[in-house]
Image 1: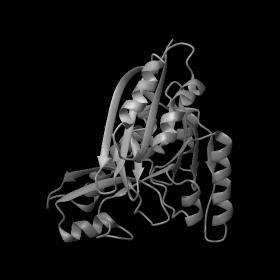
Image 2 (image 1 turned 180 degrees about the vertical axis):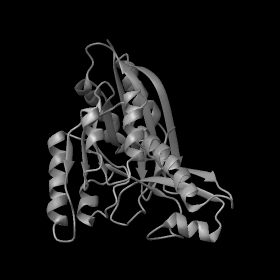
Image 3 (image 1 turned 90 degrees about the horizontal axis):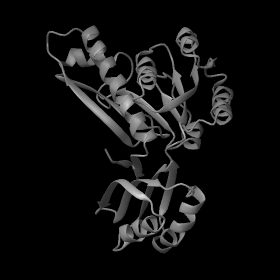
Image 4 (image 1 turned 180 degrees about the horizontal axis):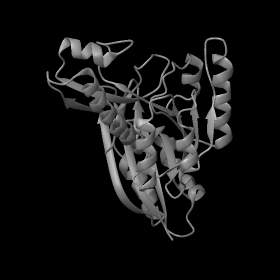
Length: 283
């Protein structure tokens, strides 16, 4: 059976990049299934994603060896992912479980191709859900006195499970700068899109008082700058004056769940590439 791979690369833009890569893949008799590219004219950086099938007997080492001259010639930053290997993720959640439940459903029906290695929470609320799904559930309470130790335990779990992505499915704790830096590009968070207008407690109530007409959600990579990491996915929905704060919250829950799932899918399929404070997202 052919093996499916995804190659992502970025480098300074100049002629010959695509030809150099595709020529080597053709020499391996690999079949390109999908190709996306973007030239950021502001930074002069070229981004590319190639999905391809390699014939029997051609594995990762052979592909990396064949591409090495092109990588060195253009000083490329590359990632090669074997699509046949299901990615492991860790989901972190507090009391609101709507985003977690949506993720688990999308995995169950096959829309998200991932294995949830663990669910981590600072509360007991989602234990029954984890047990129903057969997923290890770890309750790690956190407060000001044990934050460093709790985050160290989380990092150890991520390492022990071999997880490649941490998903904050409404995990209502501010992560330390050290934690965010250690897992940069490997943590996705979801939050309402009122920021920076309505900070702090009860943002939907604040929005209701101001008579907002559009609500939304943002999924982004976590950085030390709170809720300001590179954005992966967003969605908005229209609301009216007739809707109560609870109505806005309900609409927001739906949007948050969808946006987070789409962001996770884009990441798992290697469709997101970091570009400074922004992302390049190949849909």
